[in-house]
Length: 287
Image (cartoon, rainbow, N blue to C red; front, side, top):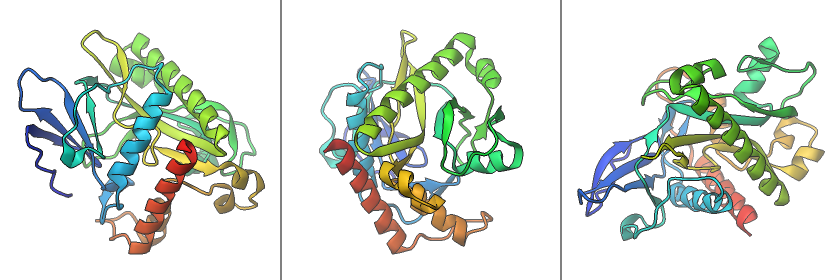
């Protein structure tokens, strides 16, 4: 993993798979600096090399989505961002992060498709027979996961387990808010000829107990976006699910790695194609 940047006036706190967190050296300043790196992860591994300009691109997209979703409280606060990371950082209030990845699926694909083929379910939720890879689900599904510590695999969990972790009232708030944000975002994406197939949100609570959308939101790292026209006209799954996210990376790894030991180095062509798709998504959404 790359070494976190040294930022004058800020102290490095923690590095996740793709983001670095910093605290102000001023004890009176409780804000957190969230810096997006160019690191890319897949199958719970951080890969090498990173995706060129990924941190800046995904920060730009997160900021745009936070603006579109301003009716939902989020973690952003005002203030000057250090020039060295201005294009890839956000200032955020310190939150008590909840240990839940709030996944919403509107279409069947990925691990959900694998489970459906085996058991007719997604995360244990029964689905109608006859669905094909890439089909729209009868209704969006809330399929949460427990956020595992660094180096461990996230664990899909049922809603009852969410209740055990955060309480019934908060669990219902997480579910309902996640589904509402997905519906709003999917509608915006549709206006731009895009399908938001699935996404994941992370939330934290502030000192008043208010639930706030945190981390990144609706980026190419946390979401699957497809071209709507290709989905309508495509005759194969690869044509229907023309992706604007890191699926290029996932597909290459799946074909070149058995998930044993350390993952292989990403070829230059895969890195460049992924960066180009990130840029194309931003251009289409924000045009």
